[in-house]
Image (cartoon, helix red, strand yellow):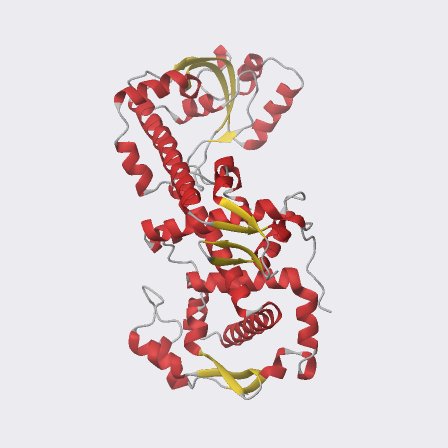
Length: 450
């Protein structure tokens, strides 16, 4: 889970920078350079972590949140937003994603209390909050989105369209007595990813009404939570969720995380600086990574269709000799030799059949594979038996070795840089931890309001 992303890196040297104290305010879990980290964040994310790791402790989660906060601050300072956010054109805006994540967490952990608050509304539904519903006129809709179904290169409003969309009030509601709030067409629009915007551009009114209701639900949930726990604690929880993602993005930029094949400008720069001796040392220490299949000795059986291939496969399953099956069923020119392909060397551009042979394990009859011809072309099917495989190390001076070694050494250097950054941040920060909170058992379920 993202909340645990920094746990493995939390080291004993960090403990020297933290002070165990007892805060008068139980709502505070810690202070980092005087700034509060709230108990609500620790408890909510501890419960979330325990859904996946049953023994996740409050102390470990607290320290992970502290580490994430420090790393996220460094990430925002040293990297651009698009580097931390991935720059996806189909994703939700960062603040919208944060809103949705916070609302989802509140629903998951405080569902019964939220339901009770909903039941207390007039009519026991969100409609009890609504003062007035509005809609865009056809003319306004066309001015904002154009004619439905029109061909577009992108689904983005220009400044004039945004200004008009802000004036179109779709819902007026009250979360507090005598205080009207609104949901506008622009607010619904900016909450969408590209798929949602397509629905709006196509004039999908059912989708629009659904999104208005979802927006109202999210605002109701966060308003309830602010009243229940305090606006500052709720803002801290939202911040903690954001910092999980920012810390995870920072780790990814350093080659650490779920997607170990992901590239980044940082890794690219480090890779260009890897020296020849470093490549040689990596090759020497990781020689097993550079093993490849040098050649294979194989046979094959070519048949006209998959049904014939299944007949061959059934014979092989009964223990019939592969060469005898080739002589009986193969339509290839080498059928008389038992489908003998001889030794195939891994060099140059390999034929499709040769590539297929290199993909098969030794001593196992493959399933039938259709030759790569068009869907409407008559294509033969191939069954392959690799009788022997010979492996060898790639040449130490090959470009393939250099490419792999540069990437690996760059990741090692990036990880070392990140570890040094983390240690420095923890060493320089003044961290006060609420000892009373650490002494309490980890929460397993949301508290029930009395």
